[in-house]
Length: 316
Image (cartoon, rainbow, N blue to C red; front, top):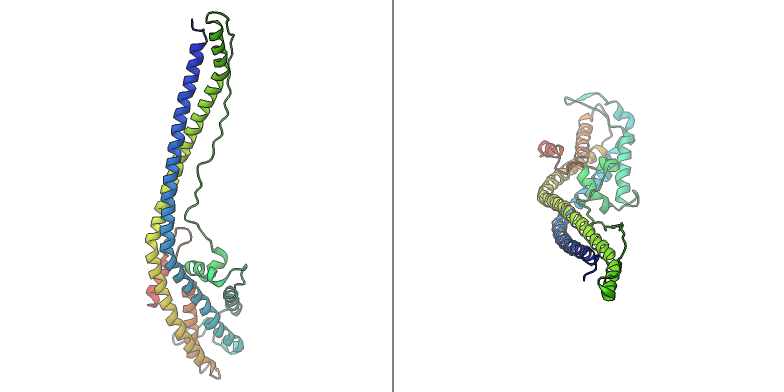
């Protein structure tokens, strides 16, 4: 005769086993999802790094070009203004060749020059110029000092480990007889093992379910990240094109400004006689400042800025 508790205890163990099997299956599926997602994410990041490398070099070159233009060309003009400050002030708010002259504030110019020189020397927060330059190029030299931000395309972690604690609540009495000593021994064994088997099975089931849910969420996050990476890769050629445009404009303005400033330097400057020469140097150095302070990318959207397009259209 089968002991009264053998069937329900056996059913409990079987239920725990079924739950454990389901949980184990979910854990295996979760690991498979995570593995595939991580592989896809890693592949996308590798593609991004490969595509970014030449653009990063280009941005570094352009950023250094910007800083050197401020240091050398604008620095030379600021030094000349400082030496001729009294004479230059006589031209402030005057009309020269149909343009109203607004003499730049010397402290502002000198501060911008000092900042550029410090960056070139690696003196800002210990950062080297080659590290600063790409971000300065993207965000504009003047804004970079306060608004420079580095934004990773994605930061993903694996599914969190799940801890499940279950309590077994229940009890009853074991009636003697019927199955004899052998059946009694089996029942005693079942009484000892059934709760553990059921708890263990449910624990595995809960862990498996949560890991599967977390893995699916991770996959969704990775899918979004990969989409962002692909968008970034598609944007890179446009960034390179805009950088090349601005770099060419800056090179031309810088060359013309140096010629104008050198012509100004050799003069025994008289504001009544040499206002046109001063105006030419002033306009060219202002154009340089406008170009170097033009952000290529919008720090919030990551898209090419409208202002950089307008600068290209203005000076090309």
